[in-house]
Structures are given as C-alpha cells and as structure tokens.
Length: 167
Image 1 (cartoon, one colour):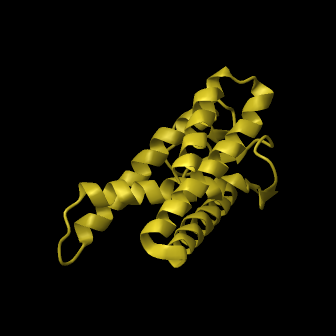
Image 2 (cartoon, one colour):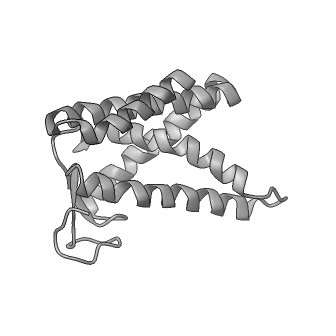
Image 3 (tube, helix red, strand yellow):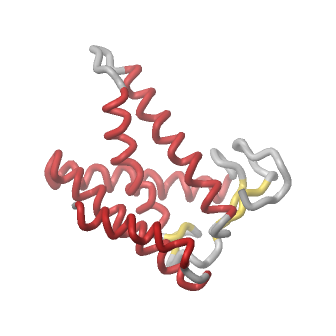
C-alpha cells in the first residue's frame, strides 16, 4: 500500500511540472494509484469484501450521481466534462467514479478518527458525510479551474450561482 500511495504522491508532485499533454495522462495515473492504495488499505482493514464494498458503493454511487448530475444539473448544478479524462460511460469519464472511491475510504477513516462512537451512531454518520463533502469541495474547484476537466454552468440547480465559469 505504501508503494502505491507513494507513487500517487509523486504523481501529484510532478503534476505542476508536467506539460498540459502530460497532465492528462498524469491525472488518470494518479487516480488509479491513489484508488488502488485506498482499496488495498480497505482490504487490509476489512478484507476483500470490505474493499469491494468501498468500490461498489463509492464508485457505483459516484457514477450514478454523476450521470444524474450531468442529465439534470442536480445536485451539483449544470456541468460537462471535457474529453481529456479518457473513455466515458453516459458522459462520465470512467476515471471519475474511481476518484470517488479514491477519496471515500480516506474520508471514512478520517471521519471515524474525528468522531466519537455512540449508540445511535447518528452524529458519526453526519460527520462522515461532512468530511467527504468538504474533501470534494476542496478537490472540485481545482479540477475545474487549473485542469479545465469540466465546466460548471449557472443554468441548473445545485449551488452554482454565477454564469458559466471554470471553478
């Protein structure tokens, strides 16, 4: 796992030094290594079944939310992906659901560490969701603005409130 995470970190360090054409591939490679490291750690903690659950729930759920978002503008507002992230399914680059899985496991681990266990577990779930959303809120603007991977549009629902802009 440390090797995979280390490669993902090196890819992130190399990103600002890469040319625009190299960044396209580097983005995909970074997500693949980071996602692999996350799933390997989930497997270490909860076995293959745990890692498969993370993959199915996070990547499958992420794909479903992205497809709904692209078609309806809910819950993120209207947006579209560029073609620089490789093959896509229903307009969603396949690397995007893997990015959801990539971040879901670390967000869950951090949320578990930040919250206190109680009998009804309600506050704990709330904090897990908040940690995931804060992580996504930090990652999404950079992907829009610096990489031009997708553009947010003001025409749909969600939280977008300005004319078409790369966030």
